[in-house]
Image 1 (cartoon, rainbow, N blue to C red):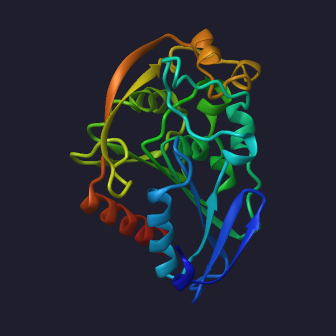
Image 2: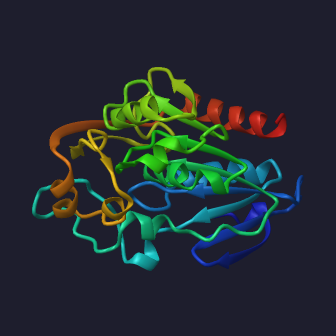
Length: 252
């Protein structure tokens, strides 16, 4: 998959580190976090882009060691998420020792980025959701973070409510005429989901730390509705935002 682009690779904890053939900056690591389906085309595509531009890349897998395969965000018996791991456990990743760690997260990986924003030099979160709010998360300084929202994304409307309550909210870019998943090459489908109302109440850390990919647990905290979500790749916007991040990294 990456053989022609790298001189070597290594695995540190749950992170695949890819070293390009020619490194432009030894101090920088581009750290990529996946969404609800695990590492896939979006992560591979952006990893190749940054390897081609001479950056060392780390691809996080925060599912496997917690025995999580894929999240469906459903209450249907055959698809209901019933995992035992909590989001706090899943998002507790060990950051490799680089002077500058640039994080890029997709969907739930963007949520991971928000929770861990203080660990990163820069933090780019594509269409993140909100799994719950604590006062500490609302008070956190997100000035190093940029959230990229898809204009037509119904799934992540809770993020907007979260950001409106933040003391120092992330910067915001809007991807025009885009849907959730616009960074996933080849993606074009609609899916039924359960959408939890995660921004109604501020949780204690004790409550927050019990949250996980488990419908029965989430429904005990949050009311929910049913939605059909459109996922659609937008090649033009995908390329544009990869280049925009590259430019942002180089000039700050």
